[in-house]
Amino acid sequence: MPRRRSCAAPPTAWLLLLFLCLAGSLGIPIRAARAQKQWVEAATIASPVAGQKRIALILGNTHYGGLHELKNPENDARAMATALGKLGFTSIVVLDASRTTMRDAIHDFADRIRAAGPSSVALLFYSGHGMQVDGENYLIPIGFTMPTHKEDMGDSAFSAQKVLTE
Image 1 (cartoon, rainbow, N blue to C red):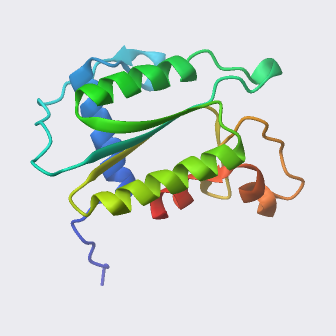
Image 2: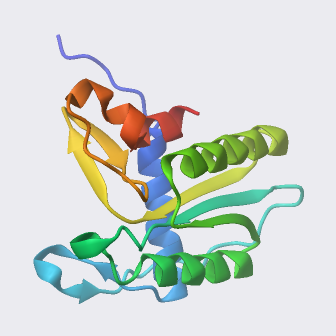
């Protein structure tokens, strides 16, 4: 007999859906397959419900050094903070974060979500290098060095799953 699934979407699905809706309503291009840019059409997003708090953590890692430099994360992070501010979000913006800085920002973000209460809306935006090891996704901080053993990956990078469960 097949296992019944709940109708509730996992937190990652809600975060992704929220990002896609926000991106479309703000005219932010979403990169589609085959490197073609498409615009996401989304319904108008309602203003915050009375008493509802909107909180965002925006991480943009650009300056990895050497050949690993990225062109857009810092600009993407600043643009996202501006756009989310217009939608009533209070944003924590962290640029070129080390592992420790990312950890501290994520803890601060989680504390703010808990303090805001269950009716709050939280959004995480990350622009920078990422990596998957044994099915787990990691956000790559500035100053990252590949660990010798894959079991130590969490000591060098930040687990995306840990962010969602925080």
